[in-house]
Image (cartoon, rainbow, N blue to C red; front, side, top):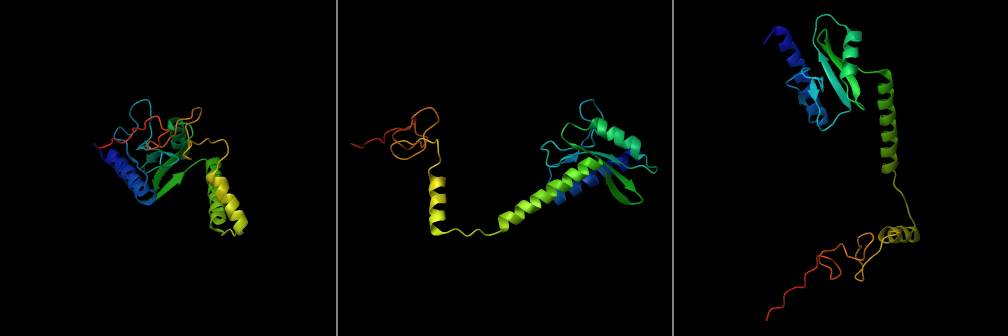
Length: 175
């Protein structure tokens, strides 16, 4: 294997290892790494644990425009084209500005939602009972004579141990 392909392989493995360690992402270096016609990214993220399609470059001279065009061309729809490259012993990433802003908006919205979920809610006894009854008795759900939920559009109980279930078998009586 040539020195240049070893450099590229080492950067790809470093990126995959970092994503696995810090995000728990199930990514790995694509052994074909750009070969073939269907997917030309350097990392395989089969489970889409990250929103990124990553192209890795480990060159002495930097050509961001050219590399970014290649990255965008190989990116699957709905994924963020991400160029990761070495620059003076720093590993840097380059993504389109709109995608960066969209990620910042998602982080802001999720942070607000988490803060809202952490805020305790105080209910009166009457409100708590009403809420519990509303949860226990959802609208539009039918029940069998034993109070179990029935399958939509039929009167068969979904509890397999209920006498009104389609799969119910009477217990055998010992003689």
